[in-house]
Length: 265
Image (cartoon, rainbow, N blue to C red; front, side):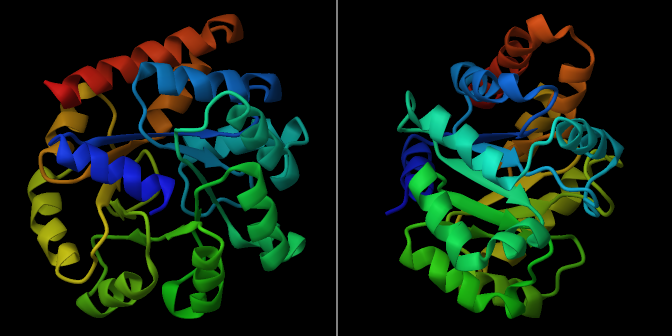
């Protein structure tokens, strides 16, 4: 059982919901990435999604686009992201880390080289936004052979056929995009999410995390009532934009602690 699977299974056994925060590696500054990862854990994160900066993040809204731009301006690429994970693993062997990004940096490195280096760095799962399930069965299989989970996105527009395709290759968890549009946009429709989750679970036998549009403790708690985990990204990036860098780790830890408390109440 992978570190992601064991983490989510333990939470389910305790009737608790997973908290999966997202930050972009290298934002707001490379030297803050590892301290921010530890701050997220101290605040109550169960799994960390670490964004790989990319110049054309098509699924991301302006907030995460700005984070990618700041990270790229610092010269942060895939190899440095893997180094951040190695540094995090020096003192944390328990919290799963998922890399979230796009195919181009992986394909430039080479899929098999990437998988091997990600495994050695201590990565647990990878979500490649522009890898459709029907076109990356070999990549997903290679991930599984190396003990890494292949995580896929599902959307409100996903059909039963599409969900079933994801169900064949997904491991760890699936990430359900709670609304149409890019990250950080729109208004959450809890009723629509609640209707979609059972449709997903007919075809997918891994936990379902829900993200996009979760901005505070109240929305996180509401989404957690119908899902296995909540994913929060843009709101954390905004927190980082609104505080001086010397206060970044404390601000993020405090924000996540508030979400954790709401989920556990």
